[in-house]
Image (cartoon, rainbow, N blue to C red; front, side, top):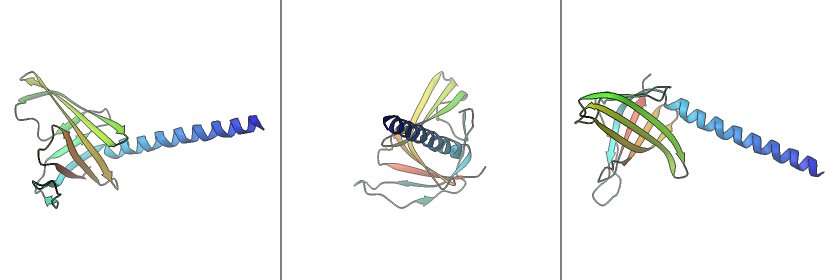
Length: 145
C-alpha cells in the first residue's frame, strides 16, 4: 500500500512540474513577434486610473526567440546600440520583463523592468517598474507579426 501511495504521489509531482513548464513555455512563445503600441494610460495626480488613450502610429517592438529585442525607439542619449536583450521572469506578484540595451556611443547601458501580461495572445500590456512613471502608467501593444 505504501508503494502505491509513493508511486501516485510521484506521478502527481511529475505531472504538476510538466504543467508548470508548459505554462511558462506558453507565456514565452506568446511574446515572440512584433508588437505595435496602440494605447497608453497614466494615473491621475491622486493615483486613480485614467482611461486608455489611443496612440496613432505607435512605435514597434520585436521580441526574438534568441532573446534579442528590437525597438523603433531607444533611449535618447543612445546614438548607437551594440546589443539589446530581454529576459522573462515569473514572480508571485506577476510576470516581469527585463530589457537591457547596451549603447556604443556613449558607452552606457540602459535597463528597464516592467510588469507584463498578454491578453488572448493579441495584446501585450507593459507597466513600468524601473524606471518608474511618476504618475503611474501602462502601455498596450497589439501583435502585428
